[in-house]
Length: 302
Image (cartoon, rainbow, N blue to C red; front, side):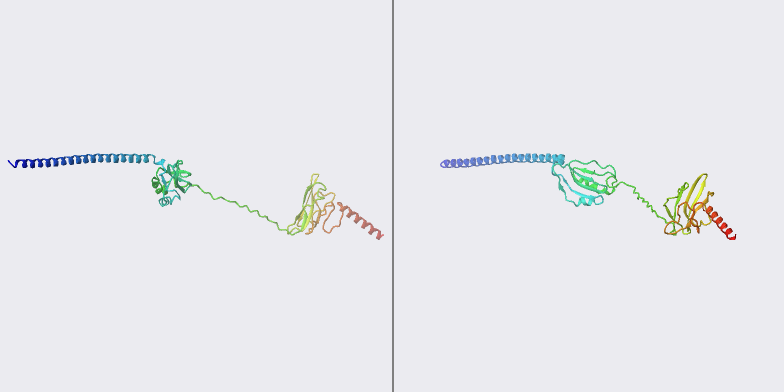
């Protein structure tokens, strides 16, 4: 019984120790539960933040896809090329960011074979036929959509083929005017053709004689009461009928042509080879001369 107080003290001590241990474990458990709850809450918060961030990113991406043409992020491989080399030129050209107002990347047909790629605020009218120029062969909100057009450019009848134009070689007609000079012997005669009794007087026109024409002649032709006169070169007029008061078709002058001037005198007097100057009625003078000679011879005989 003497040991009972000690045993009670020991039991009380053990009870206190057990109570203290249970208390400490209880505090630890509460602390752990709080940490777990805090961790769960933090995880939920993190999830919400991540989820909201993803949604914002998706919304932003969707917004960019919808309005990508309204931002300055549009790029275009700005270049100029010939239809046969447009694809290789485009693929080897670095992309350039367009201005904020540019909404499209346009492949433009400048002429029959020339093209250009550039940023565009608005697109030109589409090319609809082979002969059309200054038109749009392709227009997209992204430069990548032009690749297929450029790859088939050589086979496209709308954007590559130039109109077939029939070319007619101009025909030039060369007219050559050659002046043919008739052969002549250098001799000159008056050239006259007129109507009237003395219309030939005062005429000055001359002509060159052909090689076989060595005479000049002034000839009279009468039609009714009208006398017509002609003058010019002739081969031989020495045997022509000499003009008298009664002849209608006759030769008033016949002389040897010279290179100095016309030998025709145009004075109205007979001018024949080996003849002396006499009036237009020289036969009368010849008859008077013959009569005078006959009278003289008769006087001499007497």
